[in-house]
Length: 147
Image (cartoon, rainbow, N blue to C red):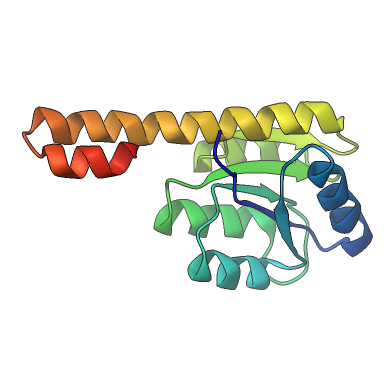
């Protein structure tokens, strides 16, 4: 699997740094930002494959980040990772297009598995789009999408 571009978004800086280190030990490199505003700037500059996103943050909260990301970058897979969410938040997040909804504290192996699954799911969507281009006779575009 190619390098997965992961963006970690959480206002708890120590938590995010520790999580980033733990992911690095599992050969997953990530970038960390500490607010919804930073997340939106970062996504605009370099589109990640996966966003691991907290819900409760000052300023632009995680639900609004999810809403904006899915509106402008639907190909990005978003995993909600929160310590303050509830069943209503989970339902809303899934309706907005979150790939998964996990609660803190999270088992790092479960998070890694969900990151890899989200990446594969995103690539499956790209492959399915490539098939559509191939079926329409646009083989050059299809080839670029899968290479």
